[in-house]
Length: 298
Image 1: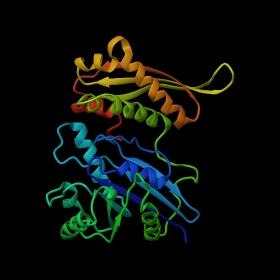
Image 2 (image 1 turned 90 degrees about the vertical axis):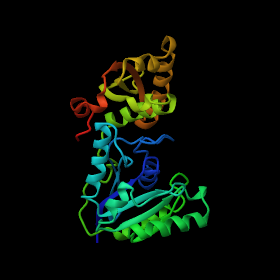
Image 3 (image 1 turned 45 degrees about the horizontal axis):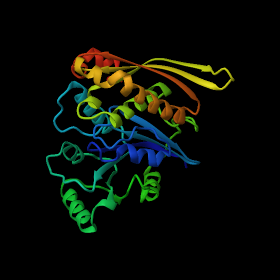
């Protein structure tokens, strides 16, 4: 019997959803940084075995009180994940405290498909703390199974994967054997640039930028090696942010470009020539036309 289905991962910002999906799929499908609200879009990661196919969905972290239209759209991706899940993974940061008023807990109360409660970062808390949090959450939601994992270290991930495969319904293969995601290379290239901005800049800057790939050309170097020529625009939401991105004498954007290029070459497995430009798109996070341009109504 061939099994297939959609397994959606939800949780608070920085709970480790992207890290978990990458651990399950075995590829770096989503950007991972230590900052919350890293994932902005819904991303599919596809794992195909001999007799099964799982379509994992990494969603943005649930934002209890959105301050921008962008954040409202990010929450909308989470709502969609409740409509098409064969199995739901509610990822909980074992270090955090939870309460009955959390947006996701309210939604999970009425979820009728298999729900797995997954405690992440278990190496950072005591067994007693885990037991207390599990007992508390069980009063509010009714998980079918509970797992304790460290997505970063891989602890407990094989057991979780085995349970998911056993839970899948009988179904067809949705994607070819060698397809790992629903997103194209342009998307991941833009995510790599945003990842490096999150790592390099501080305070509001990383959350005020959006990336657009202006051009992506496949060509060759003089010695015949594969080369990707990429031109990208970094949009900022205020005039004062542009000189911060560029830095004194262009030093900051030069460092950004160098690190992003290295990551792209590792991801694309070929040489990359990268050009970065900075433009101002004031208040783009509340601009419907800008959000559509940046793919938030996908």
